[in-house]
Image (cartoon, rainbow, N blue to C red; front, side):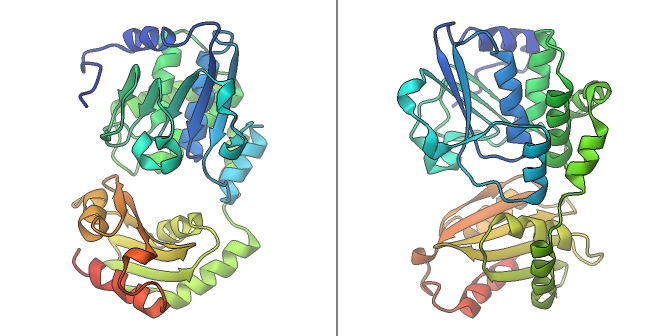
Length: 330
């Protein structure tokens, strides 16, 4: 589907269109795959429609397990409901931010009125209001542009959430970003509670995480410029992301690829420091035929049902070798 707004469309035009979607009698459900950018964007959308609709609820499809994300939710007192608590009969309008319907089966069940995202536009994305800016570093940047266009000054709580959302999704602007992201970041700074940002960022490690790092170090291998770790069965797929971010810091590595088995799926996380190749496209090329794969230039993910593999996941060494053989083609 073509983007509904021409590139010349101003934030004011888009913000006015956004406000026209629900009526005062509507109730709005905002669905997210909870991470800092998604949480912040949902809070901003909720603020935009504050007192403009009868009720607004934010629902997450995933469990929040990362220590820093848990700290963000706790310190900023974010009220998120799990998707299983969603009573669809109570809502008349639907929004999704920092994701699109094709990203998860939980999203595909709903027909959205509002889609706001910065990932690649998907084939299932249809909405009365849709703003997808693939070049933006964070969805939060889009929401800040709406807030400014509507002359809504963010509270310190909202500003802190949006600030941290941009910070994490751009990896402190180490990933490709736009002038819009930088301008949004600068605009927020006077309103941000910096001590809370520092506390969230210092909450990345737990005793359990340190034990996992020890296991990852034992499994680590460097294949030319690729840091590779297969973690076997994991209780939390987000831990694979933490490990991948860590091993990208190895001086000799331009890539970090971390895999693991969660439930009945093989998950492969990609991180790319060089930007010479697109991590999302590489993930698709290597794993798309077995499952879903994609992402950004510097970060990507593949999820593969074990039953789709000839090895059936019976032997963890076979799973490791399956991933290892494919990443050697990078």
